Length: 252
Ligand SMILES: NC(=O)c1ccc[n+]([C@@H]2O[C@H](COP(=O)([O-])OP(=O)(O)OC[C@H]3O[C@@H](n4cnc5c(N)ncnc54)[C@H](OP(=O)(O)O)[C@@H]3O)[C@@H](O)[C@H]2O)c1
Image 1 (spheres, rainbow, N blue to C red):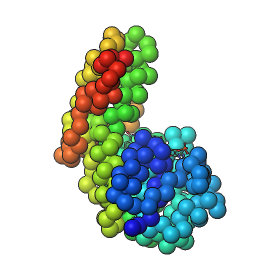
Image 2 (cartoon, rainbow, N blue to C red; image 1 turned 90 degrees about the vertical axis):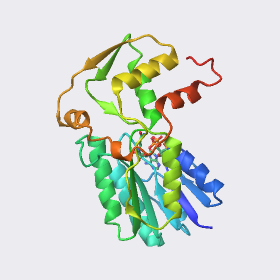
Image 3 (cartoon, rainbow, N blue to C red; image 1 turned 180 degrees about the vertical axis):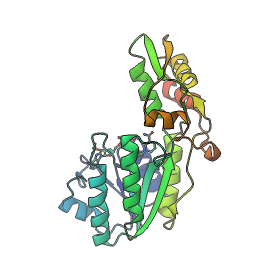
């Protein structure tokens, strides 16, 4: 039985990775800022990090903060993992981080490079957007009677549990470097995905396509964040919505 440390193990992805690995019989430690006994802010690193890594064979790095600091967090994690003799570092990244000049994607790419240069065994999986991310985006946008959507942008959302399953599989295996990307089953316009969201929630909103400017938008418009040739996810956005509203009268 290997001891596996999952950073961000309470997050949208991490908690499913933890469940999966525990179901497979692994000794799993969860590290976040708020989960004793491994409550550690990775951006600071401290004795808690050393303790979390002591006896750990593999680290699955799912922690992230939208407020920044992911590069410093990865630096601290990798340095401590090397000192602890961790054999395998697994990182979850995003499809197109090298094609879309979006600030968060630049950070993800920089962290990927840190893993590649870590001097220890590493695996990096890039996935497309999780269904839940789009759900929350539409939830926010539908607060006003008119829902603005980026014009001519598509997405390929994927079921987070399927990504977690794949990540757990990679964590159990030997270091594999950059593995094949993982995309959801369908490439869809944002308009069509928003329609499905509105249908499922019973909301009536006017959808307005807003042309945006700038290199990041151009890259999204060109589909830099998509992996149509790697549409390996099976669960559709509609299936995700149906499960989300099951037992709630189907509408919300
Ligand atoms: N969401 C998507 O559509 C998507 C798609 C592809 C790849 N990804 C990648 O998947 C990974 C997980 O995303 P997610 O959506 O599951 O994130 P999430 O739900 O926001 O969870 C983030 C996790 O990181 C922990 N955390 C945040 N800052 C930390 C810090 N400084 N030190 C230690 N732990 C910290 C959080 O717990 P505390 O707040 O308690 O510390 C939480 O457990 C990210 O790397 C993301 O880029 C996401």
